[in-house]
Length: 332
Ligand SMILES: NC(=O)c1ccc[n+]([C@@H]2O[C@H](COP(=O)([O-])OP(=O)(O)OC[C@H]3O[C@@H](n4cnc5c(N)ncnc54)[C@H](O)[C@@H]3O)[C@@H](O)[C@H]2O)c1
Image (tube, rainbow, N blue to C red):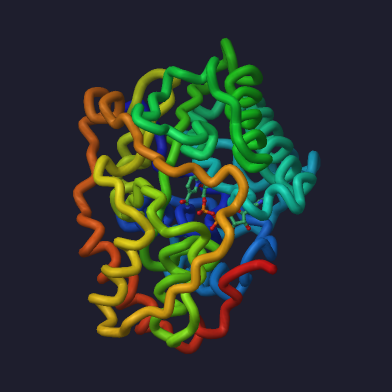
């Protein structure tokens, strides 16, 4: 292990994955410097809930910072210059919204990642772990999505383009520097504290509150739903990898949206009222990862069954019913 202190920076710490990662590392004894702009891409109440929980740990400190601002490089420097690892989880996520508001996606994904890479170069931090996405692959059709097909990638959305350009810029800026660039590409992540703009939490909310369940298309799209604890265990393993690399982090067992709805019905004991809507642009039919690289290199594979993951997410929703009922679940 190359780590010389146990301090990490996590951007996007008020977000879904950044929150879970911070929690895991704090419990493992790390000091976590959390950074987030607390933007309003979805309800800030959920971000406050996550930050409130993290602040219970004395090894956690939080800084509200917009990483798309060029001053953020010097601000980060003032906050810290001796962390060993920078987990850059901050981003503006979501495919549909990215076509409506492309400029914000360029700022929060491409520009912010450029600033983070420059900060890493300046401080000679050991590793930049940069969250990316399966969205850059488009539709996988019959074949599995593999990491080393970058040269053929044509990102199908503004979101995917800004994430891929972030990857490329970070690799270019840090080429021949002392900082490794490790790129986890997540497939659809779900679980407690999840995002209200993503399908599983929306479906749970609508079913529990006996509202119409809006499904884009016929619901037969297959997705690689990956439970957040599995994603976090992969992210911890990625930290110890000794050279720059890219890893798919997903699940081999793809599931349709209709099956997810069935499992939520089973878990809640409530029948859904499904309304099928027009399919969104460039929404792929099948998203299926090739996980052989991460399995061989880091000995990681997901272990949570979708049945169990949905059960835990429903339980969390019910425990936080009042707050979660009050969130907005779909942007008009
Ligand atoms: N959740 C998924 O299924 C999924 C799938 C693929 C990739 N990803 C990637 O994983 C990462 C985390 O996703 P998430 O689901 O936790 O999203 P999230 O929206 O819950 O968290 C992202 C956080 O980043 C913050 N942020 C955005 N712009 C910022 C800026 N300029 N400066 C500082 N903070 C900023 C937001 O306020 C938010 O709290 C993102 O990079 C996303 O692209 C997520």
